[in-house]
Length: 406
Image (tube, rainbow, N blue to C red):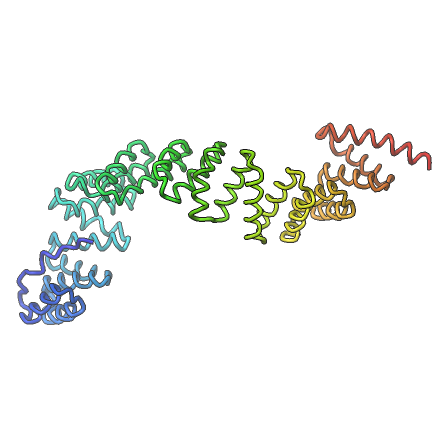
């Protein structure tokens, strides 16, 4: 964290020399609890001894007892306003505790005292950034990079500040400078890719993701974006690697869909079936797999998936619609009528469902209700389905003649 211990060796006016000396020895030995005990006794002896408060605060901060440290640093500044080390340490701790607004004043004072020092400028920039004071934050981030051009967090902070303002093209070089200064910060550039996505610039996000072939999250997003852009062939390699490293449901579904769209039908169907087998209670997956099988004319298998989906969501008119169509295709007419009845009961009946009902009744020689259904379909379709309407009119004529004979 970089707290400043410059006051540790100051004279302890008016306090027990033994406790002062023992406290400093404990600090040097990193025995922070022992140091706290000694400095507390020094404070008890002289509550106005600002050095005892300072050293107590420093020891408390090393034990992550930030609230105590903050309180004692504030006491230091009340007893002796303007102490640089106390202002800096107090500001750092307030930033660490996300009390950014309170951190600004002591850090600004510290930065004014030592404008060429890294820490006051950097932490002040962090505090200002988090209270949306971007213009001033930019000034201090720049001061921090000038104080130490190899301090990557300052470059990242500057980049984030620009990105937050929508200045994405300006942010890119700063992210790269952070990476150049410290390779551990190379993946910070992925933040910019996220920003490009949010800004609806997927092509630029894709360029960045391609720079990180070893990062699984980047490979995954690359594959997802390429697939979304319709470039399924290019999406397959990164998605295959993403699935190999992290076979999540989302990854595998995306890869299966990419296979299917690039005519790798067998691979896509097999993978999708494996996903469904691993997530048998996922309604959406069942529906997707059912439609995939239906499109491949595997109607009995498709019907099974749609029936399973309808059991998972009994109030889904969509699922029962698919059951009806699949049942008709495999000539399971009683099942088709049951499914159509369910669609109607759920309030999801549309002209197409009425037409399907007519077809089923017609094929099962239930001519009168079939005629009624064809006529009902024609009354509500209103030119929306010209091919089906033509078929319905033809069947109406045939059925009227057939019924007239009886």
